[in-house]
Image (cartoon, rainbow, N blue to C red; front, side):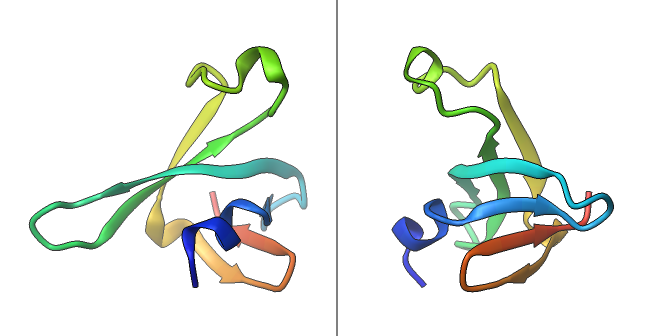
Length: 75
C-alpha cells in the first residue's frame, strides 16, 4: 500500500468510534526501515495545514486494522 492511499483514509478510535483525523506523516527508524509512529492531523483546515500543533502521534503498533475506507486504532 502506498502512503498516498493511507492519507486518504479516516483514522477511527476502536475504543469509542470517534474519528481522530487523517494520517499526516510517518516516523521511520532509519536503521531498521520500520515505521515507528503515525502522525495524525486532527483538523485539516487551510489555516493549520502546515502546523503540527493539532497532531496526534501514535505508535505504529496501535493500528488494529486498515480497511477500505478507514484505519482503526487502539489508543
